[in-house]
Image 1 (tube, rainbow, N blue to C red):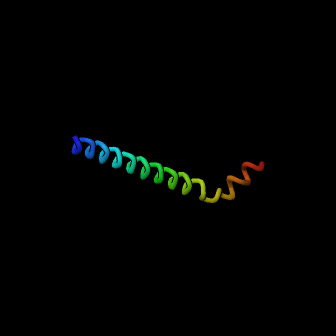
Image 2: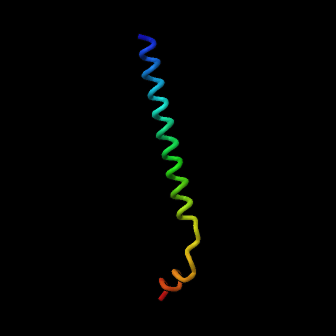
Image 3: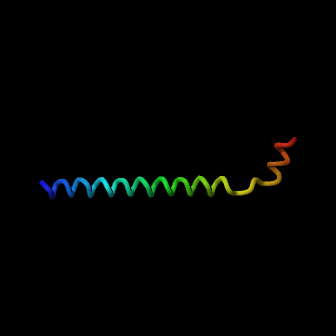
Length: 48
């Protein structure tokens, strides 16, 4: 019984760690894509 509980909790911790890493990677990817400067031509085109 204890071994089963330990295995279940171990799987939960691994899953939570995977979710945390995926979320962190997604945030990093989003930050990298939005932190790039907008090209000057695009800014000029948007201004008209």
